[in-house]
Length: 190
Image (tube, rainbow, N blue to C red; front, side):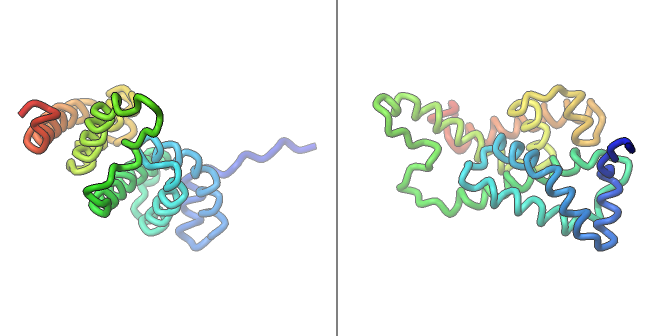
């Protein structure tokens, strides 16, 4: 009896996908669709929109697979695409909502649900402002403050030195705070 064969490494699947092997790309999708859905959900994608988000991410992956750098973890590259896609979609759908209608995230039909409304509204405003930041700052802030990653893990995921992550966090926090204070002084003290 022969030992079970190991699944092909990500780089091999990427190379085969670039050569036109659709099954290899399908293997990447199967391997990472749960990961993409989890990252998208943590960025604020609503459960009803997760399938569309996952499809959108893998469409972007297919179109930009030639930009993947061998020697770097595929999951790291995929993480960046997923976070940027989720924030781009959040920004796009925010503009499509009717102004007089409460966003789904703020609706709470339970008795006493309105007590949490202010906190929920502040969270939504922060998420919207974060989505508008430059992707360099947005990715660092999201990884550290939303996902709870360490500086070291964030640096590895983004492929930059730890000092760069620290600088982006510092600058990103200031940009985010300034934006929130200017746009929403009643919520964030103008």
